[in-house]
Image 1 (cartoon, rainbow, N blue to C red):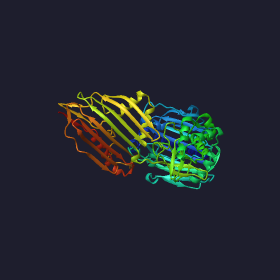
Image 2 (image 1 turned 90 degrees about the vertical axis):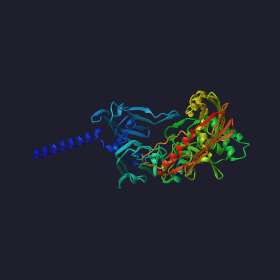
Image 3 (image 1 turned 180 degrees about the vertical axis):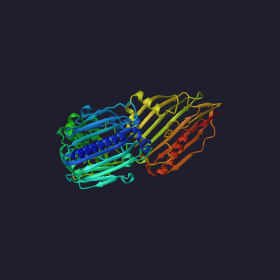
Image 4 (image 1 turned 45 degrees about the vertical axis):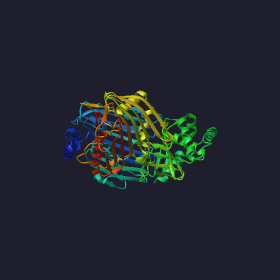
Length: 638
């Protein structure tokens, strides 16, 4: 009887194992995917489970299991499986398996099969973090990759966020995020956009679990919110933590700023008496704080260059100011701290500020305190105004936020604690591009012109880098910029960078052998030669996201057009004007006399966030501008 019971037990066990195996094989078959998940997708996250166990303030273990089906070559990046490690972060488990579209195993990777290299970049002198990764070149699509890892980190200042939707055109079949906290360490959560995606939440004494299922791929839309603002996300932070062996405590931005100041910044601003004497002499005849700061900023730009130092706590702690002074280089932390020390030697107070540096306006989250930011800049309070310094740049003007640090929340690190402050926002009227030109048209259809472009505000930022290109590349740039002018030739180029007024001037000579089009005895020309709107916004059947215009600006144009000998302008079009909530536009052509025309153009774009229903109105606004910009007039023989 006992033998029969054992036999039945074995049979049932084998049946159970075979059933599970069959289900696994079925799950890995890409040919059985739900069409709602394959639509618009380059890849599908079939299953992802991230389990984070917080063992202590000195140990956090992250276990990851992920299965991704790649549908085409554009989805290969989502199958990249890697883990980073350093002296504080140890990889305990690492493996991956590739399956074909029928769920058949193609290749298996153990930890020893993964390649290993330094996490290098072009600007760092030294780093201590490395990466283990593998490279797989698919022969056919679709294919599926299963990845599993386990990493233990003694740094607990950063707890991996949950972002189930990593990119556009990526569907998610299942994603699970678990936080296990058996030691009952004080922990904070920031939950965003959970209701919109029907995220399941289960909280218990041991931790919290989040689950989400069947999210179709999102398509990108132009002029929309950043993806992170629209997806479900969980941020996690510990009140007590460790950063590269340094103990920390922070429950709000005040305590975070105080901890960073005391443990990362304080006491690193000593300078030699020789350097202090040199700087004192440099600013001796300056009468204002701003003028002194400007001279010191220029001194730093001329003396130092940017080199990254990402070694241990040095990834967050600046080099000593005296070392930067001696060596002449440093990263953003070091150069900011060095400038701060030089200012302090002259009695000028300044603040070390942590920021997200990006062309998108990424804010330090004012509502959730954690280790944030990827860059450091300097803030000098000057009365009721703020001076902002980008200490890593050898080219940016004094007190100028470019479009990677403008208009966003930063963490101001002070001895008494941290505060959130916003960097300068440039209004549309401050971002000016003014173009003037004298244009000479000839009977043989050719054209020559002298063009002057003057940029200010963020328009300065968008244009001034051309001065650092070679003469050949400068000419190529302008030929591409005015690519709608056929057979364009670029002559002399004279560029002037006025950093005092933050004004960049481009003087350019151009010519074209066939600008006018001959139709019978008439010549057809487009009066707007140098500022045609080239934006081509797509049409959406159903817009899903709000319209976001991130930065406003004003473009003005004024040209004198000298007509060919023997020709005069016919009837000129009436002035065209458009007024919308997104900005305004005008186009005007007037006759000075029979030999000259004057062309004027004005375009103002207003930044802001508008309802998605407004997108089509904005698209029509830009389309109408584009249409008017390229309009022609006829010149007739006298």
